[in-house]
Length: 326
Image 1 (cartoon, rainbow, N blue to C red):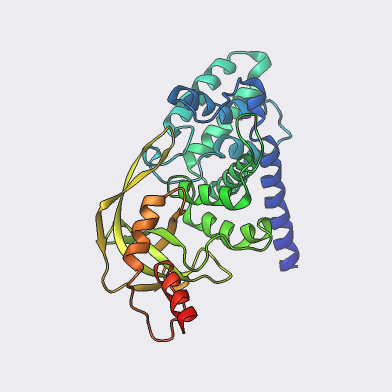
Image 2 (cartoon, rainbow, N blue to C red; image 1 turned 90 degrees about the vertical axis):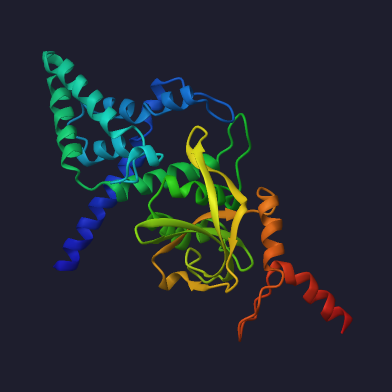
């Protein structure tokens, strides 16, 4: 009986998430969405209105589950509990409360819109009670971004799965919870990418490391990539200082190579046993050429540990030449 109840509960949650995914962007049909590569600040601010627009197209329908409507309102707010100024959450929480309150007051006086006013009050109550919604919001946001990146649009071709996932990793620190990034990489990406890993031995990545109430950024070399690619074995190469800013979304704008602080010990970590570190950036040899070349140079003389069969990128050519000479 217990397992039956659990299955019913799971089915209910899945149905809510699926219905939310179908409805979360319907507001865009009533908006003139900007087109072209790169949005201006003004265009991005306009796009941020679509969750509220989508909700208002559903508010008069009492048959739609209130949880679905809440997900529609919050599907671009996956980082629950974080200050909006430091994330890509939208719409802004205070702005959303203010706009909903104004709409409730407006429709309350209209006999034909009383049901809409009642629905808005219910959503305001859910928002103010801070009832958790972030798991659904993370799923919807990740699925939406992946679908968008891998779809062809008039101003660009579709990105490959590899390219799309790398872009998402590099945006993830300001956009998604660490948990959803791990689950996406470990349980979804392989099936989307013909069973091929995105993060592999020899790759360079940046991890966010938390300690003493602060967050530090470390550039690392992947030395062992297992089935769960979000949790590889890594060697720390150096502490790195990213430059962050909005363009128009909050992102890593650059990494200051002049301030690199190399770790002479090449401290090793297994991320499946270290919850204080998580991947926030994938360093691509063509997109991040200058940083990639610097890291190859830094790892060329990396000491090998006992039993270590991995050859860093900087030593691979030397090893091949030596083998051919012998």
